[in-house]
Length: 295
Image (cartoon, rainbow, N blue to C red; front, side, top):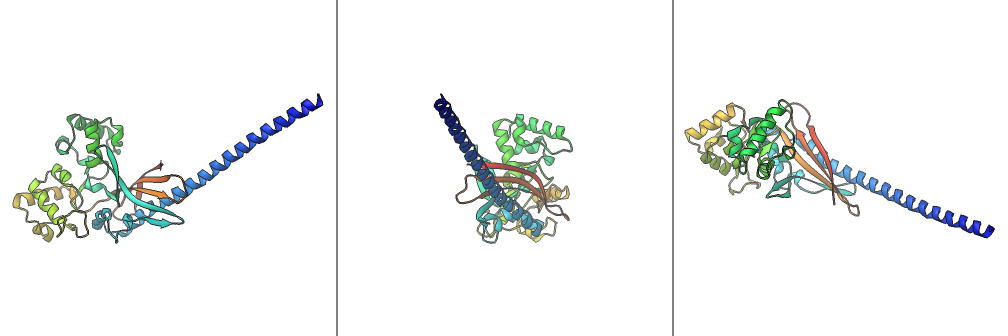
């Protein structure tokens, strides 16, 4: 009988030992993963800090160029940091697929919902009558508050993709230096004027997004760059009206970005998406911040 009791005690101790070892291994693994996540998050945060500091040091009219690749742009190259790496860019969606583009995303390149009406929205490619109705109702409901993310507005699929590409929940003006032709036409510029403006912006190689791209530093009537565009009187008048109404500017104050941090031998990638504001005489502010874990 004694032998049986002792045997059972030994079996119980062995079981307890195995369970304790499993718990200890599980806890050790959880601690290791949490430490790794802390490192990955720190590297991704370094990307946000780099974007903030770079915006602080960059004149407003030049900020749109931070989306262009090039050796002089620290936001479009992979950076090493404390044993890890990070890279900045923005996540764009087109045709139902997302893709990564290096640099800061310029909210001034999109049509702000503050300028949206039924006509401008209807002119955006892919926007449906139902999408126009939902967006205008959402803007009215939001009032002075910021509009909810487009994904939460129950838009139909074509309108949602259009909103992601061409609409911004921030700002109250379009940046003539970064806006695509679809947005410039939507705010009322004639197609002929848009063609001339984009041709001048593209520089001597006539290719947008390259190192010789040019920026307007003014939209006043005596601006030499506007004269070089050879706008006719009607086109120049529309530019003047939009500029006078403060709906067309040469700079942006809101930017979006995604910073990814990773390290060799570590599992996954930490992605931080943020929206930054550059007020006229105040430090750069972070307006939105979300963290995602990839892989």
